[in-house]
Amino acid sequence: GVQKRGYHAKVLDHYSNPRNVGSMSKDDVDVGTGLVGAPACGDVMKLQIRVDPNSNTISDVKFKTFGCGSAIASSSYLTELVRGMSLEDAGKIKNTEIAKELCLPPVKLHCSMLAEDAIKSAIRDYQSKSKRRTPTLGQKQ
Ligand code: FES
Ligand code: FES
Image (tube, rainbow, N blue to C red; front, side, top):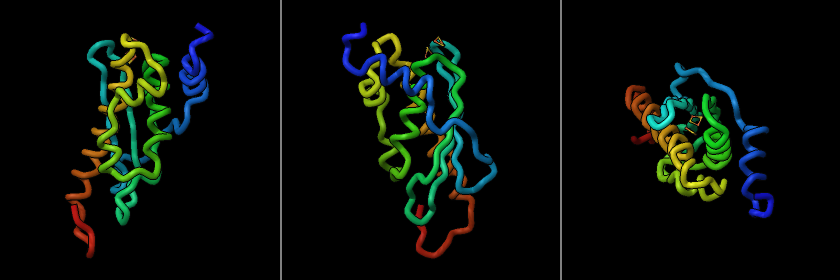
């Protein structure tokens, strides 16, 4: 209901005014792309991160979600959360944190799972790309 603190406000705000919608070039070596689907409902989320290879932090992030309001809100919130974060920290984000922040009901937990899967998959993609690039002095991993 309307009395529930923050509940509708936060989800609706991210849903009707999603942050960081868009895409980046998949071929850019500094960009990692995650494309994941939710088996429970068939919704799909694409999340892309641009990584600063010197600091190993996320300098930019974009998403496109073909899914329900909770999935859109989860991805929008996630993009705000991971900007500036190290890859290591971003890889540890749990869907329960997202669900808690947005006050998603249990039936909508899998929507936030999509966001956790997407960031993990984007990080993996970036890392597999960066392994292929010529090693630069002082850069590891
Ligand atoms: Fe996919 Fe909710 S079941 S939009
Ligand atoms: Fe399936 Fe939300 S992602 S209902």
